[in-house]
Length: 597
Image 1 (cartoon, one colour):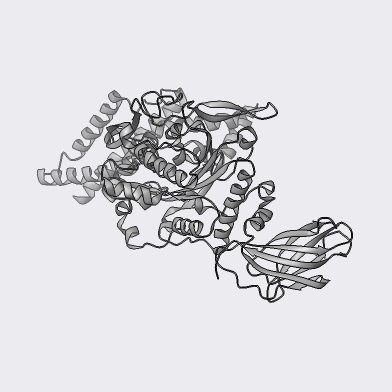
Image 2 (tube, rainbow, N blue to C red):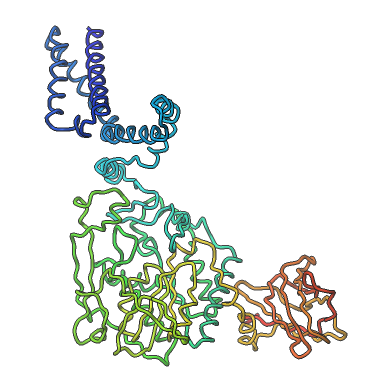
């Protein structure tokens, strides 16, 4: 009996496979339409044929055996169907692609025999390459896969996205577009768990880079403010996966925020406290989308108000209108889905229209009445228009620019990622011209040749501080050391007069370096003619910890250099390719930007 049923199943399988091979062969030979075997009529005939064949093979069995055989057949068929569904869904593509590849191989030959030989030799490798480039699963299979993983297995189908609780999604680990065509890898999970901390050298590089930008802008009449924006995981940690809530370390965001607040000479704004305060005041509406990683436009307004409140404290000489939430009508669409995010996950839109989309509509009689470029219907995702700005020489460049002739400040420039972009329209209440340039890595100093903003606000998202610290172009930091020395005239660590002058000097009495400290040494040379030389900086073991080049003359004998905290001595040597030095050190003064012992 068992062998009889086995023969039945084998017969059905062989007939089905033969039928498929026949259809594909006919399709390839006679050019039949791609969906021949998928058409409803032919599909129904195939099902009827297989049922008839199965019934005929079981005609001699008793009813119990027949029922058992049918049950086993159905289970086996379902199992095979699930496994074969992805491939079966692509059978038309596979047949068509085989024809395309074979045709491409044969087209390079003139003779019939050579064509056949070219196809036989080159088809496997060429077909594999073609499938790697072109093979795609049908959208319904991708959606089925995402539905099973998200709603049944409770895992994310995309490594870039971490699945939280109550419908929340967070940044995961994977590649992300940073700026322009630059794509980098970010592990937000490791950072949140405190497994990717900054080194002291990296934190110091952040401080120096931001101070260089501030000093450079101040020399051109603009103020500089740096803003750190948190990712959603820091505002809604209770919705993170349970495994992440149990393991929590000190993140880079927390490190950089406290470091800049304590050690950097820049106006700095941390947006996490005001966002948490707004969340504590009201559970609804949320500040971030549940799905997309960004804050929504209510969260953007909270961030904007926090920035404006701090600007008023940093620069009391300027007026800063601060719109209230009551100055807006908040329109909430409770049946919205973020299409691009759902596409990333692979989930069908029609089953996930449970997101809240917020539009902030300014009420009449407020500071936005004279704004010329607000989107129709309120403040929502809408890129500002590109407009030309003109430099002193008459040349122009295009930037995103909003206008409000009734605002108090002449100009504000906003530099940052997509989070700051959501705040742009709110700033129309504060400046007659609001410039926006999207940037993460670069500091677009060329803009400031064409425009002199009153204030430059630069923002960066927590995720992007996982990349290496920023480094400015040489010209941006060319006068940083001199400016740092000038600003710290009251913090002299050491002043030594040397008689006679020497080429190797021990900085005796210099205290040990402190965290976050920047030291500048002003070295005065005894020099009779102009010379170009190098100053080697030495630690306690006499090892080289840095070299700085100097050009000195009798009328300009002072060279100012950045002094590493571990440096306790210096030596004057000839610059590479230059004759031996004649100059010697006559005096050294070291200043610090850190107060107290």
